[in-house]
Image (cartoon, rainbow, N blue to C red; front, top):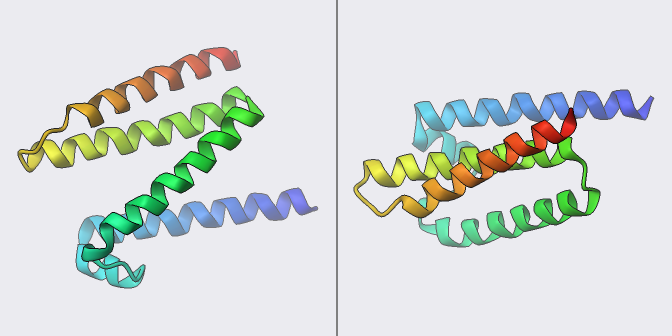
Length: 116
């Protein structure tokens, strides 16, 4: 019973996160206002994001399940490639983000192979 509830919670999270992502893509100001973020606070917010990603990576390493690893690495790949695109378009150094995105994608594919 609780498994079914948590499954619905997970899908609800997907819908909410996708909605916020779409709003941020279409109207940055409205999206930032909705989630109560301010551009000048980005360095502090990034610190918290990296701390959260570190905890996620720690849990993934602890569990050691290829499916979980695949999901986390795929998300890291999207973040790396997305940041590379943003920084490249702005004319800033972007290679580190591109390398991280590529390495994460390669490892995600390896974990996908490990599932089979």
